[in-house]
Amino acid sequence: MLPKLNGLGRHNMDPRLSLLIQDYLSSVSSAVRLITEGGITLPVTNRDWAKNDVAPEGLLPGAVTFVKHGYGCAVHLPGALVDFDFGSNGETTGFDIWRLQSFASERIQEYGFASELELEATFIEAVGLGELFRAGQLYYSATS
Image (cartoon, rainbow, N blue to C red; front, side, top):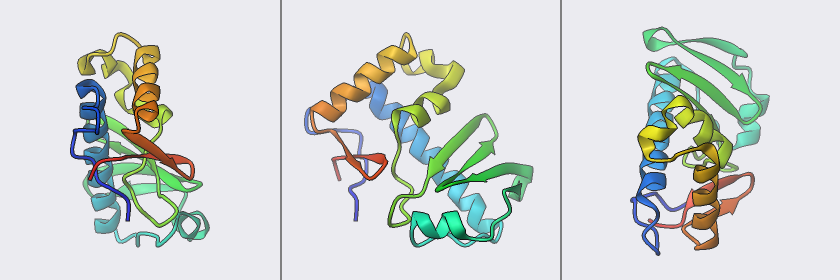
C-alpha cells in the first residue's frame, strides 16, 4: 500500500506544492466517487482499466463529462478538469508534474507559483529531497 499525503514531507515540503497536491488528490477523489456512482467499476490494476469496456467518453452523475484514456480518465468537474491515471494496483493517489500543471492551469498563481517552470523546479526539488517518490509512471508522497 502506498503512503498517503499529509502535507508535511520529511523536509517540510514546499507548502505551495503540498496544497496543490492536496487539491489535485481531492479532485481525483471526487472524480472517482462520481465514476463509481455512475456505475463504473474501479479497476484492480491500471491494465484492467485499459482493457475494460467502459465507453471512451460519457456522462457521470451531475452531468459531469469524462474521457477514458489509457490507464486513466479526464473528468470535467465543476471548476476544474482533473486528469488522472490508476496506479499499477488501482490506486488513485499518484500524480506527475504534467497532471499538476494541467490541473492548476490558469490558476497556477493562486497556488503561489509565478510560472509552470517554478512549479516544475519545486516538484523536482521535492523528488530530490525524498518527499515524493516514483513508482511506475507516477509519483506519490513519501509521507503517511
